[in-house]
Length: 305
Image 1: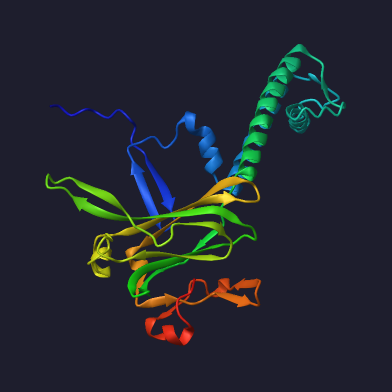
Image 2 (image 1 turned 180 degrees about the vertical axis):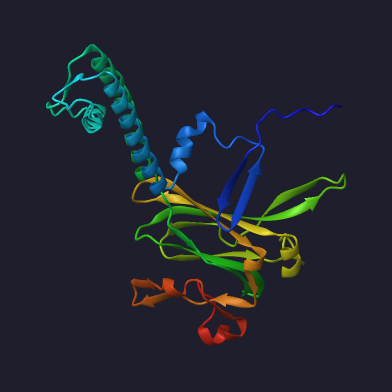
C-alpha cells in the first residue's frame, strides 16, 4: 500500500506538565475554532497585554479611517490624529462626552461599524475575564519527593499532599498511575499506564495534610523493580486529584508527576501536624517537603500522617 500524504502543515507546540515538557509536531499550532480556549489558557499578564494591544490597534485603525474623511468630526482640530484617536476611544466604549461628534455621513457610517465592533469586543472581553476569575482553582501542595519506607510491616511508596487554603475540600479523591514503556512481541513500542492500588484513595474532608500510600506487595506493578531500572525506563508516577470546593461548590482538579529520580528509598517524611489540646491542629508547611533517614523513625515518633 502507498503512503498517505499528510496535508497538515507541520508545526511545533510545547505542552508543560510540571517537570515534563511535551513537544508536539505535525499538528497546527493555532486553529480559529480554538481561539477561546487559547485565550482562556493564556497567563493573566499575557491576556491583559493582548487585550490592551488589540484595543489600541483597533482605535488606531479607526482613527486613521476617520482622518480619511477630512474634517468630519465636529470640534476636532483639522487633521489631528490625537482628536481622531480619542473620538474613536469614546465611540468604541460608547462614552459619548458630547464635545466631539460626527457631522458627515462617512463618519456616521464608521461610527456605526465601530460601535458594533465595540459592543462585540466588550462582551467577549467581559465574558472571558469573568470566566477566568470565576474558574475554580485548586491550591493543592504536593511533596517534592516520594519515599519508600515500611508501614505496618509492609514497604510503602508514599508522598503527601496538603490543602493550602483555609477551607474544606469535600469528597476528595486521588488516582495514581505508573507510566512505563512497553514493547509488544510484534515490536510495537508504547507507553502503558498501570494503576497503583492505594491504602486510601478518598477522604470525606480534606483540610490539613494527606499521606498517599501504595503497598509494594506482589500485586504492585513496582514489585521486584529497582530505582535504577525505573530511572533507566524513564518511569513516571502520575497523580491526579479532584474534589469539591466547599466555598464555591465547584469541582477542582490538580495533578502532579513524580519522576523515578524523585523517589527516595529508606526515608520518611518529617511530621508536620501537631495537636494542641483536644480541638486544635497545626500544620507546618516549612518542613512539608523534608525527609529524614529511616533509622530515625523511633527517635522522631513514627510515620507522619
